[in-house]
Every structure is written in C-alpha cells, then in structure tokens.
Amino acid sequence: MNFRKLPFDTDTMLAGLKPWIECESPTFDAAAVNRMMDLAAYDLAAAGAEIERIPGRMGYGGSVRARFPHRDFGKPGILISGHMDTVHPVGTLAKNPWRVEDGLCYGPGIQDMKGGNYVSLEAIRQLALAGVQTPLPVTVLFTPDEEIGTPSTRALIEMEARKNRYVLVPEPARPDGGAVTGRYAIARFNVRTSGRPSHAGWALKDGRSAIAAMARKIIEIEAMTGEDCTFSVGVIHAGQWVNCVSSSCDAEVLSMAKRQADLDHGVERMLALSGEENDVVIEVTRGVTRPVWEPDAGTMAVYELARGIAGEIGFELSHASAGGGSDGNFTGAMGIPTLDSIGVRGAGLHTLNEHIEIDSLVERAQLVAGLLTRLK
Image (cartoon, rainbow, N blue to C red; front, side, top):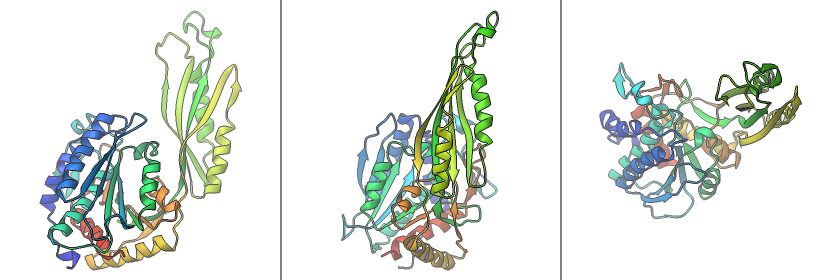
C-alpha cells in the first residue's frame, strides 16, 4: 500500500494530541511526567504495541518502551526515540492554553516534542489499521529527561539503539522544514561561589558576597564565547535574606561547539575558573555532556530516502547539522544511522508562544509512514 493513501485526518490527530498537551510534564516533576507516560502508554497499547514501563531513577520520571508485532520481532529494526518532558512548569497552560488559531495550534510542549511523538504514533497506528507490515520491526522509546541533558536515561537510549539498525527522532523540524543529520557538542557545568556572611546593614564590610563574585564570574564566562565555542549562564540560585551578605551562589552554564576538540578546549577553560578570588572560593564542576554527532554515510543514506519520500508528498526536505542537543547526539555519535528533527513544523519552542503548523501534522505523519515502510 502507498503510504500516501493512508487516511490521515488532521481533526482526528488534533483530538488525539490535545490530551497530551493538556497533561503538563516538566522534567523536574516526576509525577507529572509519569502521568504523561500513562497517556502515551495507553495510546501505544491501543495501537497494538506490547508495553514496558521502565521505572525512573535519580528523582526523574519513568520511560515507556513499546514494541509492535512483527514477523521478525526482537530482531534489529527501527527505533523511534522521543522525550515527553518539557521545559514548561505546571500552570503554563493558563498562559499558553491549547487553542487553534489561523492554521496554528498552541500549547506547552506541542512543538518540542509531543507533536512529533504523536504523529509518529499515528503513522504506526494507520499502518497497522491498513494491515501494512513494515519491512523491519518498530520500537518506540519515550523518555523523561532530555531537556536537562538526559542524565538518567542515556544508557537506556544507547542500549536500545544498539539493538536496532536505524533511529528516527521526531524532534521539531528546522525553520525551513528540514531534517537534522548532525548536532553540535554540548556540555553543562555547575558553578558555585562561596563567600563570607555578614549583616548587610551594620557589618557590610565584613562580608564577602557570593552573589557579587558570581556576577563578575558570569561576565567573564559569557565573554569567553567565540565562533568555535559558546558559553551562556541560564540558571542562578542565591540568597534568602536581603539583610544578609550572601554566603553561597550557584549557577548553571551551557557550552556548545561544532567540533568535539573545541568543546574539549571549552571544558578546560571552564574548569580552570576554579580557585579563590578576594576571599571567595569558586568551584566549577562538569555536568552532563552530549557528544558531537557528525553525519556519516549511513545517516546520509536515510536522509536521501527521506528526501525522496518528501518529494512524493510535495515538499523539499533539506538537511543540516544543528545546535541545540537532542538524544540523536548519542545515537548518531555511536555510528547508528540517525535522522533527527523529522517532527512537526512550528515555532516558539521553550516560550509562551510555542505552536505548530496544523498542516504539518499530515505531512509529517506521511513522512514517518514512508520511512517505516521503506527502511530495510
């Protein structure tokens, strides 16, 4: 059966996607993420999958692994890898509620990446309803912690990838609708300044402000940004009483580089910031890291297949390496042919304007169905 004849319906997909978006699932709220995994597990099971619930660890939510019936069940096939956590705290729906306006659909996490996850499921469901047997068995793995670097499920993703021939990642499409065939390297750091407390009113001079020291260090860190490696401070925690000179301050830093060697040099520069200045101790420790993923022949062969399928659907599928990490960094760096960002078109991810282009639901479902029926 030609994948273009599958009866994908925009209204049906919107109706199915809405409960996913209205189930808010910020990474740091394990219970909320698990509620989202419940919804996904039900929909995957209803589509015919055998479901495994994998408990969470390190304080994060659990994962869902779904394997679909196949004559070669258990043999290497296709892994669809997606995350169900978002950056939006519970309550964001009040600011960016589910709504359909002027060909767009809004909601927290709809672009990154629940929309892509849902259309992948819909592609599998429609193939099953049509009685179409894919050449390779299909496994879906939904995980809970991509937005913070995948600290608790990297090993799970990598082990699942090793058992398959191909990995598809339905992260949001690039701005021009294109796919991602490589990603830059990313490292995270934790920075702590430890000063000396004092009363901020009558003994200010006796204190050593950890906040002031961190402010100076932030300027220094962000000034290290260049063409080869970038540095940005995204999180700061400090202080409890305004009448006390702060004794500690914590910050989180993200660094990105196009080449692994540049990131390695950036790591050295960050770790070298540890020390003591003006009686304030600075400690820099390394957090989670995503390796650089450079496209190889296997990935490019999958892209060329996808480009041909896109042409049949009626659009041009470009490709590029991209900044911003995903779990494709891991599988691509392992040398497993990986095609990333084949999810929905949209804009505003990680903002209160996050939305998708409704017309891309059918387009992307057809793209995934085409890949599932032609990858061998």
